[in-house]
Image (cartoon, rainbow, N blue to C red; front, top):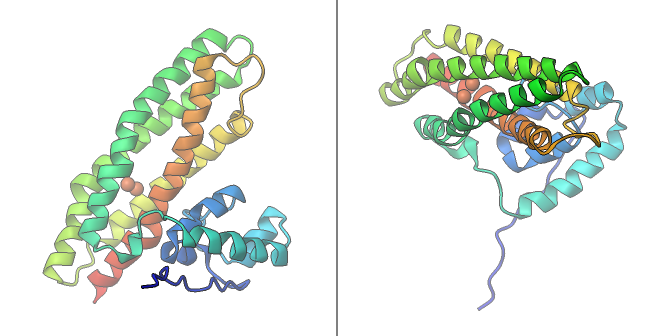
Length: 242
Ligand SMILES: [Fe+2]
Ligand SMILES: [Fe+2]
């Protein structure tokens, strides 16, 4: 008997394709946008044409790259398909993966950044700014996740279960999106302060581990915020309005 691989629908992209919607439908494509340094989470509400022009990328070449690299990625193992999950299931997934990761990783990064600033801040003042930004990010994200876990996610689970329209979601979601924006800005500031998370020749091992940890943090934050901004929140709002 011949076994056939599951067919993958061809990737048809146009200049008007919305990036956030595309990654919501095909989460595996997230890493391509990371490679191109195109924001697909907080900045997901933009078309491919707009994103390319903002990044100075040639549109036709970029579409061709996304279609061919995307087809390869989609044929392989993928990131979880958030769009196919129930809302409670997605909230559980976000808590057990992204939130759990941040709760253990942020204090570690914060401690390392402080150590690097104390030891080497005298020769590079930016290291002190890095430590301050990581500290601020840690405080913000810990409080942000607490609000999602104690207020917003329980409300989303309740709405999915009860199917009763409510306008109680809009305010908390707006607040969470504003906080995502702020975390995104602090992360972009960290990328700039660290020359794209790349160590220089004198960087000690802690400094190198810090930069690798920050780069990983940025990737995880993009995926995390994408699942909330582009999948969980709009679907919960649609359900609450029904
Ligand atoms: Fe979250
Ligand atoms: Fe969030």
